[in-house]
Length: 150
Image (cartoon, rainbow, N blue to C red; front, side):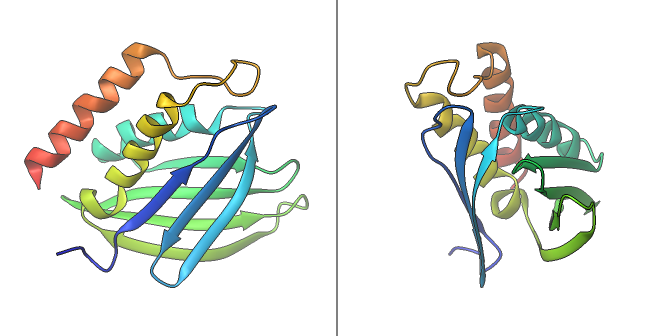
């Protein structure tokens, strides 16, 4: 049975440095187009996943030029993951949007799967930077580890 805290994450085909991102959690839905300038948020998400699985709090900046959303990932206790989403306007005023907690299957694995799905799309490097094969392999290893822990 699916947990009510399970997140749904979709990354659509990128174009000209913009990536459509959809995140759905219970009664909250975020539908944005994020930029790869100044940093690739998918790479930041990859690093955040590696960190939070190791118990290190991490943050991902989804740039909207100049505003953006921040995803804060933490592991408040072993096996429990928290995602907090806030919005920052160009004036750097932070507005809390939503928070959820759950297992790795609820919170972390949906982002892992979305990254893997994005890597299966055919697009030019000028449209969006790709993760390297070794990074995708490491992500696959994290997915397997989290499934075993569940």
